[in-house]
Length: 73
Image (tube, rainbow, N blue to C red; front, top):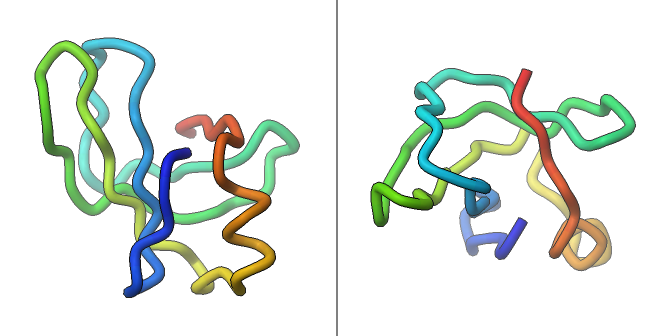
């Protein structure tokens, strides 16, 4: 993951050109649910995803999420 926006959305960069549909659930490697994809944007080769977090992260949680690997369900 790359950033937490002021509105609490997570900005995630995909690993390649795979299509991730809006509405896809996103979890961390432990299986904890973090949110749902609400927007796909950026370059086709490696798009970004805007993920609406289940619960807006606190500043400490946001820092722990940066550079974390998130997976789609």
